[in-house]
Length: 315
Image: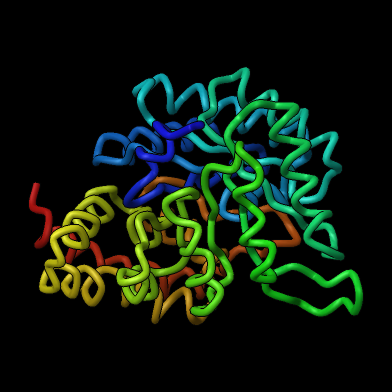
């Protein structure tokens, strides 16, 4: 079931970032220009998700509207494109089913499901996915990230037993691995090839998982131009260590080491896209966007990255 979409879900998966205009409305004009750019430069797999896509700043109606817009836009670019959208960060299983049905009816390939309810046991989580799968009949991408324990309130990684239970749900096609913990990621990769594992984080952190069968990752610096992600994946497939090293050191490291490490990934991704001319960095509170002084650091790093990019990918 869902083998075709799983087969296409290899290599770089491109985040759909949500821009806001001066009135803090979703800036669909800038969003469309950005999606056009990623597609034009080689992106074919698009993913609107909980945090990068700013679901936490949107009403549930706005999330539904954003999902529908992204699905229709991505499929208009090419019906063969893969498009994944998500459900609200906090909602009931009943509402997740409603979002999943809407995504399917609109043309999505997968629904990304994030459980932010407190974790009590594996059965609770598996039952949620199974109920959604049966009701919506749409492939599921599980957004895996640390839970809050329902027993003591502490943050906890997924139990190995929960990973192993996921294949029981036939609609589960993929998993976004977002623990950023080596052991947890290795456990997740044992689900391959039954479940495609999309690893989040920078490319340098992705590389150690090559021996464990890693087949897909979520973009980082490739948000600037899909040629970066596609070139990296080509080098990864060929085990071209020279090309990999060049991309990691000249394009990825400057941004992650000088910007994301200093100000945080979620405050710097749209700032970098603003420096590149795609969208404004503004967000809705309580996510406070970078100040002008902080943003100047991103602009300086972007200039260095752009210079290296132009040498690597001459027009």
